[in-house]
Image (cartoon, rainbow, N blue to C red; front, side):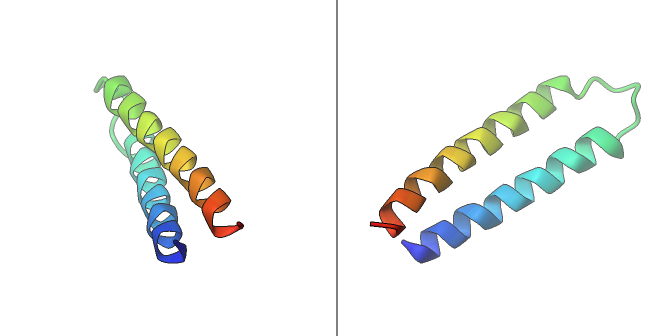
Length: 59
């Protein structure tokens, strides 16, 4: 479980970095809202997975 938790946290960090890059580096003339929304959904899912793993690890 602890390894799974570490993998989820690593994935969340990667998603966060991708979102930051998408919203700051890509020129504003491109519509990135769909990509941003997809990344935010992935981050929310990873947060939920992390919370579920917390319950398992802390039992």
